[in-house]
Image 1 (cartoon, rainbow, N blue to C red):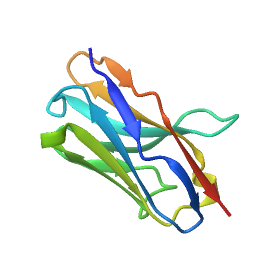
Image 2 (cartoon, one colour; image 1 turned 180 degrees about the vertical axis):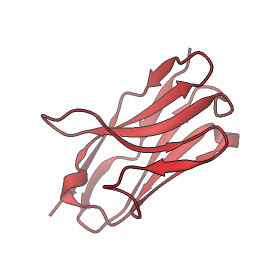
Image 3 (cartoon, one colour; image 1 turned 135 degrees about the vertical axis):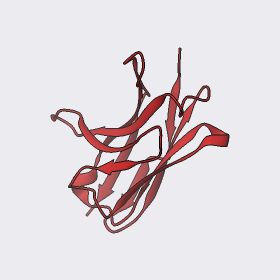
Length: 117
């Protein structure tokens, strides 16, 4: 079993920055694709960014050029650096792990990000 714990959310003004963290309970990056998703009120959860087991990254068009996903293997932690934030980025952000062998999926509890205009 894998536990994922997000942190770093909060309230920020438009144009500001936040860095989200996702701490995994054990070293899983060699077998799990790690991702960030978000869900705004009344909307479906949507993909934000992903980092594969070999370090390749991909982003949703809405955040490309503003957000950066990275990981720190020694700390079993994935980050989402969010710059130039917009009010439409307001959502609960969730960390996700997908085991590429078993296809088991794990989710964190989410962290709220609110961007004021």
